[in-house]
Length: 233
Image (cartoon, rainbow, N blue to C red):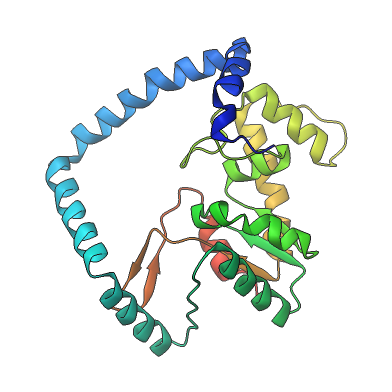
């Protein structure tokens, strides 16, 4: 179900009537700032590095044409293809064309906010392709038929009970109990491994494009991005 901003207050009111989710929200709201503060403290000159990266980012945006041209030239030199799209519709069409050129049936996807915005999954599925999100949070909400609730934690609104029941309903693995997060992660890993091995094509996002050498940089905590980039043909 797609929640538009006009429905926010109604959706929020409905969510606040769920005691399990309000408890989860309170726990997340208290623990996350503490974890961040501890990480910042352990890092050292966090603010100095943050300011440095901010300057680099702004410089790149101010000179985007130059760096995109440099990236394209270096990427082509590495044997890659580079495509530019004017909008989301054109990007979706380009991706579908590439899939059709290679007779793709199944897509393994890493997390990508760009494809979330362009609704690439829906475009590919409407064309008859099977699309599997492989980031664990994205995979959970895909099974639930929902949209991500957070840019880095897509399924943060889901309780352990909800995820356990979702897996029991969607994974055809017979009678079993899923009582702990470790058991749920293990089951997801088992199911996703088969998708990695049978996918014809992989789609990943990028945290940064490196103009100097034409490479992309991707940071994940699960390794699914590496598998999407390297396993499919």
